[in-house]
Length: 124
Length: 107
Image (cartoon, rainbow over all chains, first blue to last red; front, side, top):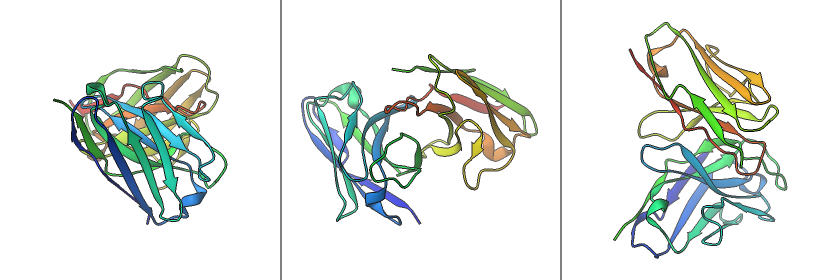
């Protein structure tokens, strides 16, 4: 059974930093692109960042480019999102997501599995 | 970036109704269109990919159609479990933008 368990969310002041983690299990982690999708209260999902299965390429939304890095440790089946210079508009539930298709070097943002999400609140 | 526009934003319906949700892309996305269902307090669930392909375990009352820039999600015979918010998503570009959502509520 595929499981994605996010952690690391919380309350942070504007300008602060957070590191989110996603512990994955139930599938061959290194074979799948992974990503982060966020959802602000009452809004639709918004893609944030993705990384190929082999870690060889990363992708970022314009809204977070330069402030966010995504990485993965395939030996630990864990995905990370380092967020810096946080703003009020970054407040959202952050979901860890798994691509639908086994392809370590390919990428398409079709998300078959979602974690339960971790809440990030940016406020003074 | 490709913009996805859904209509209506809210739809009132009764159990047994046939429901149709429309999604329009700002430019052609070929067949790279997915639909998700989300219930309050839960993560979205993939329903349909590549316009009309039902994801594993999705009931056959759900169907998708369309091409190019215009797509529809149809629920034939609405069930109590189907009252939820539905999002379309294009995945022809690396960003995979979502629509703003359509909430199907009890009439």
